[in-house]
Amino acid sequence: GEKPNHFVWIVLDKSADDAKTWDRAWVDINANGDLTDVDEAFGFDSSEGQTIELPDLHFGDEHPAFTAFTVRLIDARKGIGMIKAVFDEELKLGGGYPVNSDKYMQFSESPDEAPVVWFKPDTPFEFQRWIERPLTIGGETDFKVFLGWKGQGPASFCTTLGHILPEQEIVLATLKYTDTGGATQFVEAEFPDRC
Image (cartoon, rainbow, N blue to C red; front, side, top):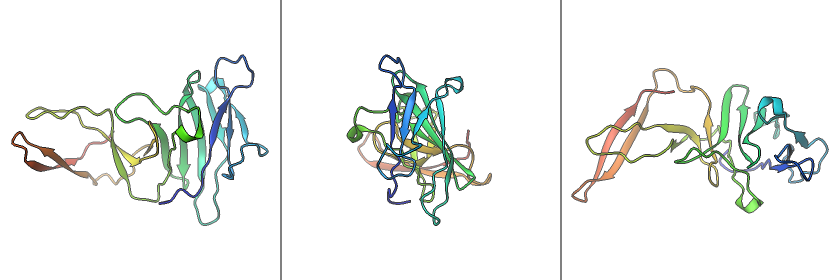
Protein backbone atom coordinates (compact mmCIF):
# COMPACT_ATOMS: atom_id res chain seq x y z
CA GLY A 1 0.00 0.00 0.00
CA GLU A 2 0.83 3.70 0.04
CA LYS A 3 1.99 3.47 3.65
CA PRO A 4 4.36 0.84 5.07
CA ASN A 5 2.02 -0.73 7.61
CA HIS A 6 3.80 -4.08 7.95
CA PHE A 7 7.56 -4.51 8.34
CA VAL A 8 9.05 -7.99 7.87
CA TRP A 9 12.61 -7.75 9.17
CA ILE A 10 15.20 -10.25 7.94
CA VAL A 11 18.40 -10.73 9.94
CA LEU A 12 21.29 -12.90 8.74
CA ASP A 13 23.06 -15.14 11.23
CA LYS A 14 25.72 -17.83 11.43
CA SER A 15 24.97 -21.18 13.03
CA ALA A 16 28.52 -21.35 14.44
CA ASP A 17 31.06 -18.72 15.47
CA ASP A 18 33.61 -20.08 13.00
CA ALA A 19 31.18 -20.26 10.04
CA LYS A 20 32.63 -18.57 6.96
CA THR A 21 29.27 -17.61 5.44
CA TRP A 22 25.82 -16.50 6.58
CA ASP A 23 23.86 -19.75 6.73
CA ARG A 24 20.78 -18.84 8.75
CA ALA A 25 18.17 -16.08 8.76
CA TRP A 26 15.69 -14.85 11.33
CA VAL A 27 12.54 -13.60 9.61
CA ASP A 28 9.74 -11.69 11.32
CA ILE A 29 7.01 -13.59 9.46
CA ASN A 30 4.13 -12.17 11.51
CA ALA A 31 5.54 -8.60 11.30
CA ASN A 32 5.26 -7.99 15.04
CA GLY A 33 8.83 -6.74 15.47
CA ASP A 34 9.90 -9.79 17.51
CA LEU A 35 12.38 -12.08 15.75
CA THR A 36 12.37 -14.65 18.57
CA ASP A 37 8.91 -16.06 17.92
CA VAL A 38 8.52 -19.76 17.22
CA ASP A 39 9.28 -20.85 13.64
CA GLU A 40 11.06 -17.62 12.63
CA ALA A 41 14.56 -19.13 12.19
CA PHE A 42 15.39 -20.52 8.75
CA GLY A 43 18.46 -22.30 7.37
CA PHE A 44 19.75 -21.67 3.87
CA ASP A 45 19.70 -24.57 1.45
CA SER A 46 23.19 -24.55 -0.06
CA SER A 47 22.11 -26.91 -2.84
CA GLU A 48 19.86 -24.13 -4.15
CA GLY A 49 22.51 -21.42 -4.15
CA GLN A 50 21.92 -20.17 -0.61
CA THR A 51 18.14 -19.79 -0.83
CA ILE A 52 15.47 -20.02 1.84
CA GLU A 53 11.79 -20.43 1.11
CA LEU A 54 9.52 -18.72 3.60
CA PRO A 55 5.89 -19.25 4.60
CA ASP A 56 3.18 -17.20 2.93
CA LEU A 57 2.68 -13.74 4.39
CA HIS A 58 -0.87 -12.73 5.34
CA PHE A 59 -1.73 -9.32 6.76
CA GLY A 60 -5.45 -9.61 7.42
CA ASP A 61 -8.39 -10.69 5.28
CA GLU A 62 -8.55 -7.38 3.39
CA HIS A 63 -5.03 -7.81 1.93
CA PRO A 64 -3.98 -10.40 -0.67
CA ALA A 65 -1.20 -12.72 0.48
CA PHE A 66 2.44 -12.71 -0.53
CA THR A 67 3.35 -16.27 -1.51
CA ALA A 68 6.48 -18.01 -2.85
CA PHE A 69 8.49 -15.65 -0.62
CA THR A 70 12.23 -16.39 -0.89
CA VAL A 71 15.52 -14.87 0.19
CA ARG A 72 18.55 -15.75 -1.94
CA LEU A 73 22.12 -14.83 -1.13
CA ILE A 74 24.19 -14.13 -4.22
CA ASP A 75 27.28 -13.76 -2.02
CA ALA A 76 26.84 -15.56 1.29
CA ARG A 77 30.15 -14.24 2.67
CA LYS A 78 29.22 -10.57 2.22
CA GLY A 79 25.47 -10.86 2.77
CA ILE A 80 24.49 -9.70 -0.71
CA GLY A 81 21.17 -10.99 -2.00
CA MET A 82 17.68 -10.61 -3.41
CA ILE A 83 14.16 -11.26 -2.21
CA LYS A 84 11.21 -12.49 -4.26
CA ALA A 85 7.51 -12.95 -3.68
CA VAL A 86 4.27 -13.47 -5.57
CA PHE A 87 1.46 -11.04 -4.83
CA ASP A 88 -2.21 -12.06 -5.06
CA GLU A 89 -1.25 -15.40 -6.66
CA GLU A 90 -0.14 -13.88 -9.97
CA LEU A 91 2.21 -10.88 -9.81
CA LYS A 92 5.85 -11.94 -9.43
CA LEU A 93 8.04 -9.41 -7.63
CA GLY A 94 11.78 -9.17 -7.06
CA GLY A 95 13.56 -6.77 -4.75
CA GLY A 96 17.13 -5.68 -4.20
CA TYR A 97 17.98 -4.13 -7.56
CA PRO A 98 20.67 -1.43 -7.63
CA VAL A 99 20.77 2.03 -9.17
CA ASN A 100 23.58 2.60 -11.64
CA SER A 101 25.66 -0.42 -10.68
CA ASP A 102 25.68 -4.20 -10.72
CA LYS A 103 25.82 -4.51 -6.91
CA TYR A 104 22.66 -6.02 -5.53
CA MET A 105 21.17 -5.46 -2.08
CA GLN A 106 23.57 -5.89 0.83
CA PHE A 107 22.41 -6.58 4.34
CA SER A 108 23.73 -3.93 6.74
CA GLU A 109 25.27 -3.95 10.20
CA SER A 110 22.38 -2.06 11.82
CA PRO A 111 18.63 -1.49 11.35
CA ASP A 112 19.26 2.23 10.80
CA GLU A 113 21.32 1.48 7.69
CA ALA A 114 19.32 -1.51 6.49
CA PRO A 115 17.98 -1.45 2.93
CA VAL A 116 14.19 -1.57 2.86
CA VAL A 117 12.51 -3.22 -0.12
CA TRP A 118 8.93 -2.04 -0.42
CA PHE A 119 6.49 -4.44 -2.04
CA LYS A 120 3.57 -2.17 -2.92
CA PRO A 121 2.00 -3.66 -6.05
CA ASP A 122 -1.39 -2.03 -5.45
CA THR A 123 0.07 1.47 -5.99
CA PRO A 124 1.18 3.36 -9.14
CA PHE A 125 4.39 2.19 -10.78
CA GLU A 126 7.66 4.08 -10.56
CA PHE A 127 10.66 3.86 -12.87
CA GLN A 128 14.32 3.31 -12.23
CA ARG A 129 17.08 3.30 -14.80
CA TRP A 130 19.09 0.14 -15.11
CA ILE A 131 22.83 0.93 -15.15
CA GLU A 132 22.69 4.61 -15.95
CA ARG A 133 24.91 5.99 -18.69
CA PRO A 134 25.04 9.51 -20.12
CA LEU A 135 22.85 10.22 -23.13
CA THR A 136 24.86 11.75 -25.96
CA ILE A 137 23.61 14.38 -28.40
CA GLY A 138 23.41 12.95 -31.91
CA GLY A 139 24.23 9.44 -30.74
CA GLU A 140 22.34 6.40 -29.62
CA THR A 141 22.40 5.07 -26.10
CA ASP A 142 20.69 1.96 -24.84
CA PHE A 143 18.18 3.20 -22.26
CA LYS A 144 16.60 0.58 -20.01
CA VAL A 145 14.22 1.08 -17.12
CA PHE A 146 12.73 -1.06 -14.40
CA LEU A 147 9.04 -0.84 -13.69
CA GLY A 148 8.32 -1.11 -9.97
CA TRP A 149 8.72 0.74 -6.69
CA LYS A 150 11.55 2.53 -4.92
CA GLY A 151 12.67 1.30 -1.55
CA GLN A 152 14.93 2.89 1.01
CA GLY A 153 18.70 2.68 0.87
CA PRO A 154 21.04 1.42 -1.83
CA ALA A 155 19.95 -1.46 -4.06
CA SER A 156 16.40 -1.55 -2.73
CA PHE A 157 14.29 -1.21 -5.87
CA CYS A 158 11.46 -3.76 -6.25
CA THR A 159 10.38 -4.67 -9.76
CA THR A 160 7.89 -6.90 -11.50
CA LEU A 161 9.34 -10.13 -12.87
CA GLY A 162 7.80 -10.77 -16.25
CA HIS A 163 5.49 -8.85 -18.53
CA ILE A 164 2.51 -7.26 -16.88
CA LEU A 165 1.36 -4.71 -19.44
CA PRO A 166 -0.89 -5.88 -22.28
CA GLU A 167 1.06 -6.52 -25.48
CA GLN A 168 -0.28 -3.39 -27.21
CA GLU A 169 0.61 -1.11 -24.28
CA ILE A 170 3.78 0.97 -24.51
CA VAL A 171 5.59 3.19 -22.05
CA LEU A 172 5.57 6.92 -22.86
CA ALA A 173 8.39 9.04 -21.48
CA THR A 174 9.46 12.67 -21.59
CA LEU A 175 13.17 13.48 -21.65
CA LYS A 176 13.97 16.80 -20.00
CA TYR A 177 17.41 18.25 -20.71
CA THR A 178 19.36 21.50 -20.98
CA ASP A 179 20.72 22.35 -24.42
CA THR A 180 24.08 24.01 -25.14
CA GLY A 181 22.39 27.42 -25.01
CA GLY A 182 21.16 26.79 -21.46
CA ALA A 183 17.49 26.39 -22.42
CA THR A 184 15.37 23.56 -21.03
CA GLN A 185 14.09 21.20 -23.72
CA PHE A 186 11.57 18.36 -23.70
CA VAL A 187 11.44 15.38 -26.03
CA GLU A 188 8.72 12.73 -25.91
CA ALA A 189 9.65 9.12 -26.58
CA GLU A 190 8.01 5.72 -26.71
CA PHE A 191 9.40 2.54 -25.21
CA PRO A 192 7.76 -0.27 -27.20
CA ASP A 193 10.36 -2.99 -26.47
CA ARG A 194 10.54 -5.04 -23.31
CA CYS A 195 12.87 -7.76 -22.14
